[in-house]
Length: 304
Image 1: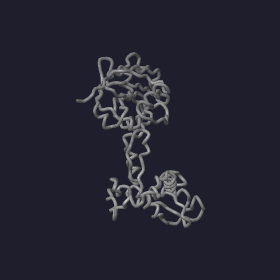
Image 2 (image 1 turned 30 degrees about the horizontal axis):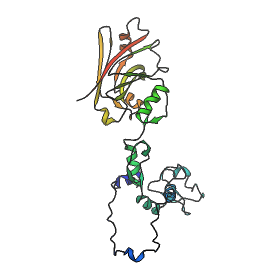
Image 3 (image 1 turned 45 degrees about the vertical axis):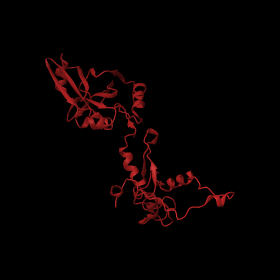
Image 4 (image 1 turned 90 degrees about the horizontal axis):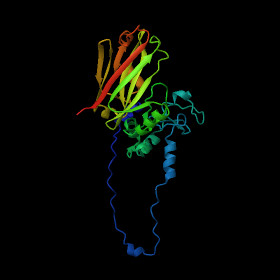
């Protein structure tokens, strides 16, 4: 059985266990002066050692069924088994097809806090449900929405706003309307196109306006779209429009901003925005059509 199917079969709600019945009541008066041992506090070291037992020695990630072991009892995850060519990474003995059922059952009895606890998640989850929760946790950090580089910074929204301003020198604007100008001396070049990103603050939220050139078939096209700095469910509370034109003609796009949970490339490649063919962009630019001069205007509003 695959890890994914196993996790789907698990019940993620914690089991309610009735407290044990007390057979008799001790009369404390009979033991006044006697030393009554107190129940020991939970041993943090034990919890840490259990975590280490569930950690794959190869990838260092948590292990989920099927958990494999060698004849000497050393374990590793199913994902890493093919990578070690059926040899135990600890003792080099042949792995075979032995499953560590005992460790799988121990894991099923454990509960752990979400790994995004430091970001505000206070939930405690059964071990086999923890991974699924974390993939959907509303407190999981966001990736930097800057598209001009492979930025690996992650964090909450206030942190990313400061990061965009200080590290990427992104223009910050307040208000729900915008007027974005894009000029390029050689519109036939796409490889060295500059990604434009502007952050707007309105309705107590932050929005990212993207504008860039990319190759579609044999010709470059231009696309503008808006992303919401938050989750998709909240993004659907807003709408936006974009308008570009010139020479007595114009194009208008209206849509819903995409959450920054969706990568910049995913939004762009789905063509979810205002797309302008190069010939039309040059027509809007006027003149001798050798220089791109586009002005994109728009507004953001909150749906009632």
